[in-house]
Length: 431
Ligand SMILES: *Cc1c(COP(=O)(O)O)cnc(C)c1O
Image 1 (tube, rainbow, N blue to C red):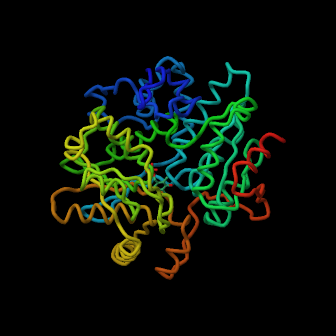
Image 2: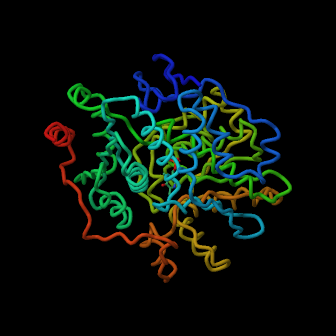
């Protein structure tokens, strides 16, 4: 499979090069040259296939010849080595729980797949690859855990000091080995800006083989398709489901749409946003206006300029009218999110996290006009990652998930740096 840049000013590359580069030299996102069609039998037989077999069949065309079958099967096995249960909340809405991985959020799958691909590619490279990544919370933990101990790859995570939850901070600062956490005295936007500047800096390019590990990277973005196949595997409805996805950078929902184009039956996709409503406004007015992000209680979706939306438009040939037949996007406030967590818990005892609650609310509103359309939400994080909001709202203590490893605050190890590119650059060059 070849990948082209959405800016069309850079040469096409293989899967391997797309993963190693992250972003095309013209700053465009890489996009697959052809969207694979899965055999009809595959979709029909979905309920009887193993998650490993599904993973291999879906990913193989995207990887092409860059990773041989045996190695790719091992990568997929290690990527999906936990459960993805579809849990019924009520008659109309189920929850596809994506938080049973090691860091309790859905980003584990993409991070594990990408890390293992890089580990495989390293066998034929001599220079070490350095992942430089900014996080507002969940990405850092998933990337730290996914890349821990991977040969030939080191990870440097920038996170905003005091602005991630305690569990999130421990997940990204206690790994050690090939993982380093930089605690930046600033905001997530500062961290992101520093990383962007680092990728363009000539001195750093000389010293390091830098790549990114956010959902721009096809190695992290594409395996997210698997969730939708696992959801459909367990789906009992007479009609295909409406799927509501808590969306920030729109990587996850874009992967779902790819799965649908490949043959997966889905009635409709809802991109559920918090008040960072760049895409909902675009869907209403046709005017795409990126803006600064606004902090909310569903903080992993505090994105004012969603990078993967251009990929969604590309799937529909840039035609917003076509997009509207399959996709809608709505904005939910923090007040509505809290009210939803409370109402669902009181009625069913199901505990939503703030991100899942945004998706739930969006799906419920959609169904109020289409009462026969059943569906599911993607529950993207375990509620224990956001204890402040939930425990004060419901007056309960959230238990840690089963098999949780207790992280010890005494093991925290981070390097504190000022929120400037210069301070990070001089640290990188002096190691
Ligand atoms: C990253 C994240 C999202 C947003 O996913 P995108 O692919 O960026 O749209 C939603 N929920 C949680 C819990 C996340 O960590």
